[in-house]
Length: 235
Image (cartoon, rainbow, N blue to C red):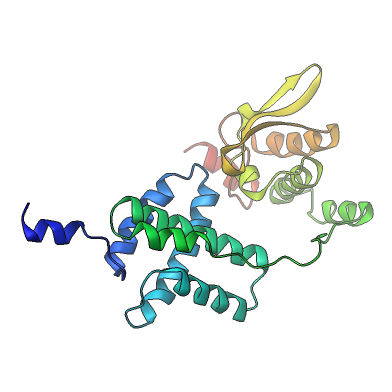
């Protein structure tokens, strides 16, 4: 084996931007959920921007610890910091698997602890009356108002995420045992589940579908008036 070939296969301590970009692609390809891909890509890009701004730093445990301190200095939430660190650890694994980074350095990065969570996050929950008030906000006399009310009904009554509502299709809505349900809904982390649909939620969705004569495809479309909806359906 030539000396030049041996040098090419020797793991590095300092990774350049092309090396980090090369290791990032396999990380994103292993994620099934588009939301997870966006979150990991944002976290990796944030680390790469910080890492490349420092002069010739080795990609090791000490550097990742410094990055965690940088995130804490930004006053980010512990959950956000830990998600960024998970993305960096995955980046180190891929760099080691492809021979770009020493396995010992990758193992050291794996031992970096995340930010400590203090207390229990309760969230800001709406009361029943607040939910009703929010649902009554859109003007149901117009097409756009019917669409917005149907979207709010699904968010409040079925607990769907924003992306799940945006990707909802008519074939997801099915009647099972005389009750309506959203069947085989692909959600976060590519999990598939079935969600029951209360009658008042189905009535709100039917009001939108009747106004726009939508019979297939996505339930919700970007329209501002009934004429706009009809023009969309003719495309």
